[in-house]
Length: 341
Image (cartoon, rainbow, N blue to C red; front, top):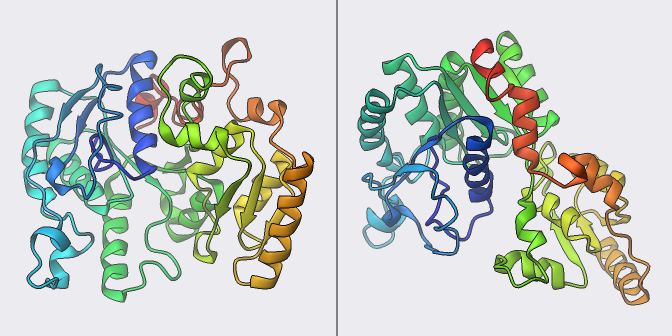
C-alpha cells in the first residue's frame, strides 16, 4: 500500500481511509505492507494514531521533502519541482524501496492511494517494473473542472491520470458520481472502474462515554450541539469523509452546498433538512437562524439508526467499516479481486 497519508501525519482526515483499510485487511486474509514518506515531509506530526497499526508492516524512512518548506529560497521555489505535487522528491526512493519490498515479500497486489498524485506515480512504476497487479485508489477526481486552478498543474494531474488508466488493473472512487465522471472520460477502461465508499471507525464512537480512549475529533463531534458540513461547487461529485462521521455521531447537521451536489441527496436520505447554498449570504443567515432555533427547541433532526445501519450493516446489527464492506462487495477482496485482475 503506497500512502502519503499515514501516521505519524496529523491534521488530515484523508489519513483515516488508508489507516482503517490497512487495519481491516488482515480480517479478510490479507497482510498489508505500507510504503509511506519520511516524517520530515509532513507539515504536522501526531502520535495519537501511531499505536493503532501494530499488525501492519511499514516503511516510512524514505527520503521525501516538501518543496514549499524544504526547497524554497525566500519563500520561493521553481514551480516545476512541485508538479504534480510538492512531494515529488518522494518518488525515486519510494520506487527503489518498493521494488526491494516486492522482491522480499512477493505481494499479490500493489495499492496506491490519492490525494497525493506522486503516490500513483510510484504505483505506476512499481507495477511497470514488477508486473504485479495494481489498484489505484483515486478517492476523488484528480483533474476536473476548476481544479487544480493552475493550468500547468492541471495538465500534470491529467498526465498522471493517463498513466494510471494505461496500467492499473482497477481504479477505485468514493462515489458513483466520481466513477461516472471517469467512465465518461475513459470509456475503454469503464469495466475497471469501481466504487469503494468512505466510512467511519465505529470503535472510536463506541468508546465515547466509556473509559476507553477516544480521538479528540470524535469527542468534539459527539459533544457538539450542531455540526457544519461545507461543499464547494467544484466538488459536486464528492461526499466529504466527515459526512459519514457526522451521521454516526447522530448530531444535527447544517449543510452549505449547491443544490445539485451529491451530498444533498445523501443528506435527505439521512433526514437532514437544514441547508443553504454557499453563494448566498442571505440564505445562509436564514438557514442558520432556523437551525439554531430547532437545535434549542430539540426538534433538529439527526440521522436515524435505520439509515446508519443501511450504510454499513455488520454482524448482529453492529455498524462496521463502510470502506471494508465496500471493498468486499465491489472489489471482491480478498479472493475475488485476484480472479478479476
